[in-house]
Image 1 (tube, rainbow, N blue to C red):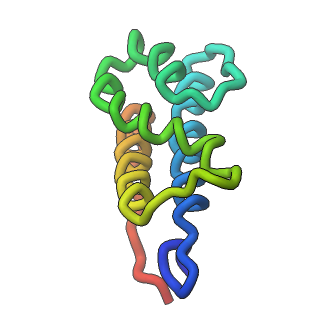
Image 2: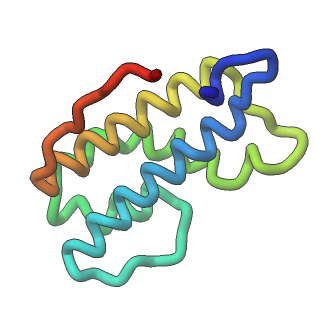
Length: 115
């Protein structure tokens, strides 16, 4: 089952996982450069460390700011993500993934339809 479907959509969880995906891709790039990887969920801070080596990551700033909020905020009661935010989070996480894979020289995986 996908997190965005069903009787109880899990928008908070979708947004959190999108943030985590972007974080891991950016930290992977730092690791590939041989840099120390800071213990942070701040995606803009990670971007700042990477831009001198990969200037094309500059265009992701707005999305990284957006995704950073989902690292902690939606994991606690009182601040819930909307369906619109979840869709946007998936788009931004996909853009980060695509940019990082391109930098790493990885081909885009073939998407197979769900069974």
